[in-house]
Image (cartoon, rainbow, N blue to C red; front, side, top):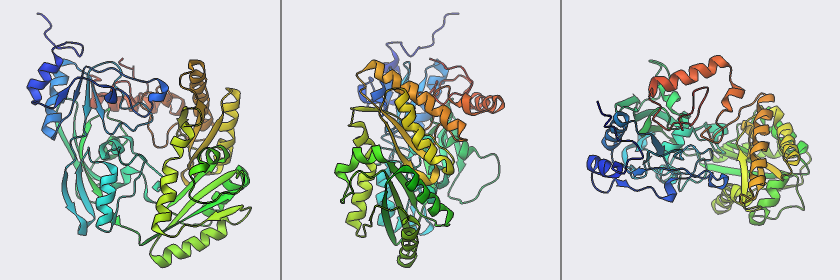
Length: 470
């Protein structure tokens, strides 16, 4: 019997999908859908079609058709990922959730909301704030990133120290399985231990198990006051000692970030206050709560941060505080501008090994003849360890990848992880095997097999021991 299945390289694919889904929902592949924020690495994929669903039924119809025709599907949010997770590796369909932006239900008095996957993070922040509420996860690029993508990568951000990563805010999910079946988990509830934690399993699965189409999210009353402090130190040792004093004092700060000397120098021109000459380390801490609570906590923070202090910046107006966090959000861009590109990885180490990881990042760079620096979420032990490169220089880019490989080994040797908030995607393929035991890898791959036995959904991403499809 002749094989009549349509392959992803078949010229009839666009026509077939347009007939299936309706006019305006299928387009030829274009550059914006073939890369993510890792385009500097040279990672640009190939696709045969882009599908832009407008409702969950479109997603279900597409996945059922792709399953029956063995066409691979790459789910995509805002394209701000830093691990290549949304890049189509070898043809097939890019499934972009950008049109699914509806707020299905909002109950501000019950501190909950149900939104579709394509809603932008910043839009959710603004809606919550205008109703006196807080949605704390802020993974950066909030005007482009989407809630579905944040869930799929379990995104973090500066305030994850107190408020948790995105998973901590998800109480329910609507998702479509690879064969087109609807999966509904949890809902507008705060507690549910009725089975395995499938919510947690899909959060951080990077689109490899199912396509998230909507989510129930919890909200919290917004703090009355937020009061950040920026402390400058002569070197890494003094700065990390201050971080450990903050943690050891039991101060429940909302954020506790750091920049090393190289990161400060790269971003110094835009800092919204005067800096001392050549500071060696910066700590950004934030107190929040009621006016009295935040004020008391900031006073205690000042005391914990005082030893070896070079300078202290304490913005108190909303305008000045917003300016500080805008600057902090732009550090990665300022760093990349130093050489027009960077290899930057989000490793995690125990907090008491943070200083060692910061110094070793610089040493690894030196061994590969690359300038190196780092910044990140000190309270979580999460470093954005970075090697500056010219992406047009193939040899330099290769040395950057070699340095990153060494960096992963260092993180694991210090008792840490290869990824704290960006996921594994394509750029970290194979690294999980360095961190996990064979038994853990086998379970990891068994989960993928149970959800996606044909390996059609975002194949090649987040692999354990399973063979990569492309």
